[in-house]
Length: 322
Image (cartoon, rainbow, N blue to C red; front, side):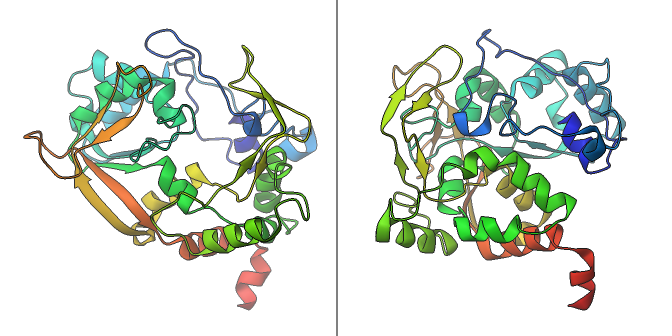
């Protein structure tokens, strides 16, 4: 995070370090595509950084959240792109914390039991289910938006679209390319997936709510180890499309017209199931008496998202010419 802020010239953005373990003391496993440093093993030269990266503030992230929620009571929006541990800590330290938050957008959850961290659970929730179980009941649907894993898969970009976004010699374009270089190396080799991959990419360009076939994973040999959820040997994993989870969630916050369809329902995190721990369970038919606490995004305007990203990464003179 610090190097990314330095690379884009945003050195004044305050950064606070939060919890390094879940509420139950577990360490999160990481997907191999994100690398050991969380940004695809990308490194930055001192020239790219323009000097030293920003310094992490001494205040703990949970305490900073509480302070900022008081300073901007009723005006503070939070976009959570990782496990909800720090939000849960803030809520436990200050019982009025959640009531002061205007809007919370969460990238997390699998609402149709199609997980990526387990058979049924999405990574961010699976990494700290207790935190999700604490945070979700504190909000109402008008103030909590969930952008889940299945939507992210259904809204994936083709690798051709990824190449369009990373072809420019701008800081923004090259930053995306650096961060996702390891992920990009997992795209299907030419001829390895044939017509199947081509049809998958076309489907990703105009996604439907049913995301069953919008991503293909292949692996010749996969082994588990203590440092990663899995390590890959041989030809490894092939990913048919570029899944842009965090960017989709942020875009849904920045431009609400990207949300084409959403529904309000009661949502709770499963904590006990042998196989279902970490799944977000949704009362789709509104059978329970509980208050609807989440607005679940079901369909996104991927074309608009692509246009937003393209405008961000292309040279500014191109924008002026158009």
